[in-house]
Image (cartoon, rainbow, N blue to C red):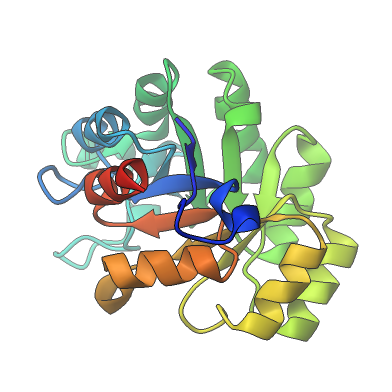
Length: 233
């Protein structure tokens, strides 16, 4: 479900599509990076669900933002059997997304070929945008051209380099690099501009400001409220 921009804005902006990206799913009422959080985000009308993917010691892809549990045990050092019931697998997440959700994949720690195999298994290649390092995204684009790779903007020079080497269809921004000079480079390249509006920036005023400045997607911890705002406008 892609919403259009605001009628109170200039025409070019008012007709631009704005994607709602649910950060770690709908995690205000559900545990983040879980199937219930994914399902609730989709039901709230989010266009993308942002999920963090890591690999266990025995090669199972799971959802988890942090590299370690509260106990200090690192995901990469534990077999899946020791965390069963505590985490959601990537396979379970893709199964939940498959009916009508799209994925914003935050690539934390995983092999490119394993990610591609999982996405192909569920037919999610064309409904996924992948955020990660330049090296990882380069490998991902080589393995599966249908995927949309998405580098971080970082700086004007960094973005120009990413546009030359990766030819991405989307670029990620956060509060550090969401600067007008850098945004303009992305706009001139005609790529999607997905900006994080999290923490103190996760407000109606900041959402509206992001749209006015060129965002085509907004990542939020409050997807239902952003969906409602876009619908009202």
